[in-house]
Length: 198
Ligand code: SAM
Image (tube, rainbow, N blue to C red; front, side, top):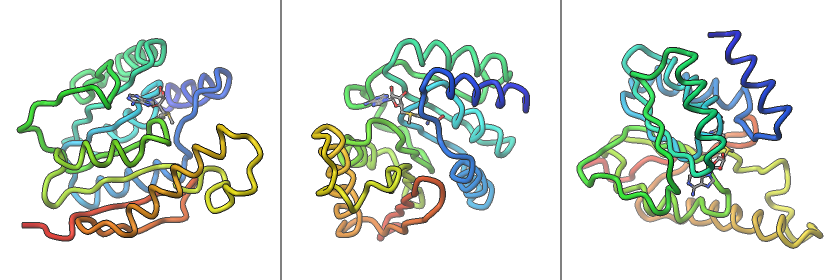
């Protein structure tokens, strides 16, 4: 398994596939263990690196992961199989903004790691699938140090994306339904839980 993880890191590096930083996935794996998380929904599988590590956190945890890019989806399936994780990980090939999950599904951890400009939309769509004591974790809250510095960014596309993350942070800070803590781990993580757990 360790060898496959190293191979995935190398593949991601060689093919410019963004994967989570080691410190951030270690944080999430610890969170899964400490909070006895049983069902994870991940938005943005890429090649399955974080899904496989989350699924390996405990014996019980199950992961559903969504990916819209076909090449990455295929690579993810291959890696899940290699690691013998077919029973623990369900990989869905679709755009998460278009997917209709069955209404009765509930997850105790939702990990948002997709297109960063979609963070708010994804949060708003998927909060309905979060159990009352569940948590939404979002990666890249610092976006390589650009967040908070958007006015200085020259590239229009990058500036617009970073502004969306800044808006997402404000949305989380002022959210009437969720409490959010921000962690300076890896590229920055937010951890949101329902204010009202009943
Ligand atoms: N979680 C992965 C890991 O750490 O190993 C990395 C995910 S990568 C940062 C983001 C992925 O989300 C990309 O592969 C991209 O194709 C996918 N993605 C972006 N927007 C999406 C959407 N709306 N629905 C599904 N997948 C999406």
